[in-house]
Every structure is written in C-alpha cells, then in structure tokens.
Image (tube, rainbow, N blue to C red; front, top):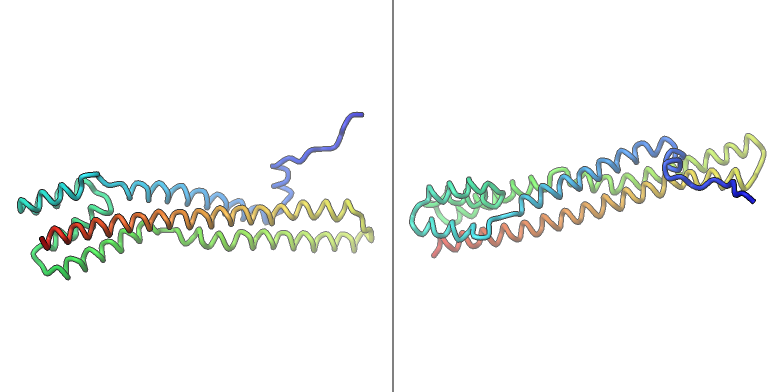
Amino acid sequence: MENTQEGLNFLELIFKGGVVMIPIGLLSIVTIYLIIERFIFIRNASKLEVNFMNNVKDLLAKGDVKAARAFCQRVNSPISRVIEKGIMRIGKPISDIESSIESMASLETGALEKNLNWLGIIAGIAPMLGFIGTIAGIIKIFYNIAVSDNISIGLIAGGLYEKMITSGSGLIVGVVAYTGYHFLNSMIDKFNTKLERTAVDFIDVLES
C-alpha cells in the first residue's frame, strides 16, 4: 500500500511558526553576523609578532625612542598601540607611564567588546519570543475549539506542533547567542592577559 503521509519539511515548519518567526529569524542572522565579525576582529587583534618586545627592548636599549615608536606604528596592533603610548611618555614618572598605558589598554579592550552586549540581549530575548509564539498558538487553538465546538486530536496536535516551532527556534537562537557571547569574552580575556604581560615587560625595561 502506497504511503501518502507527508514528511516534515524544515522550511514548511519554519513558515508554519507564524509571524513570530520573523523577528526570531532576524535575530538569528544578527547573531551569526556578530559572532563571525567579532571572532575575526578579536583574533586579528590578538596577533602579535613573536619578537615584538625583543625588538622594542633592543631599540630602547640603544636609546632610539623614535625608532621604537615607529616600529610600534608599523606593527599597528592593539598591543603595539598600547606600548607606543607608553613610549611617548618616556621621560616622565613611571606612574604616569603606567596610567597612560592603562588608559590606552582600556580603549583597545573597549573596541574588542563593541556590540558584544547585543549577543547578551539576544540570548535573553529570543527564547522569550519563542514562548510568546507558543502561547499565542495555544490561545488560537482554544479559540478555534470554541468556534468550531469540536475537540479533536488533529486540531490540538496540529496547532501545538506548529507553534512549538517558535519555542524551539527561540531557544536555539538564544543558546547560540549565549555561547557566542561567552566564547568571545574568553578570547578577550586571553587578549587582556597577553596585553598585561607585554605591558609589564615594557615597564621592566624602563625600570632596568
């Protein structure tokens, strides 16, 4: 006997989720974009020449401050910009140099964290939108039952599985956004550790 039962099609299920799937879909696009864009930006910002500090140390040991600053400008990375800021303050008290380095480091870290808060917001909003879609679907089911005066398994189950799509989709987007948020923050933490280590090396050079 030929099986005429239709299989579930992913796109059809998405469309059956209703209008709530539109904002959830938009949030999923924004989430993927932010994760990829920030990942590439943070990864590139964290790169640093292996002998960067050794070259800076050699130039400063020769007393060639101008060349050391030019070298940092050529490297042109967040860490090199922080060190360049310190080089520009050479001749002033160590406390002033440390303060300028900390201020520049804060600016560079802020640039890495740009738009990350949106991932945190999406992680909270997306599941809520999914539940709103589910609740709206359940209300619609009971409304149809009241109008048709007919309680059938097909009417209830069909509407429920369609509206549960919004709940599942919202949770998936929320989990992806939440995971991406914390993963990117862990990358920034590693960058800050590298930055602090480099800054300490720089201060040691000045104090030696």
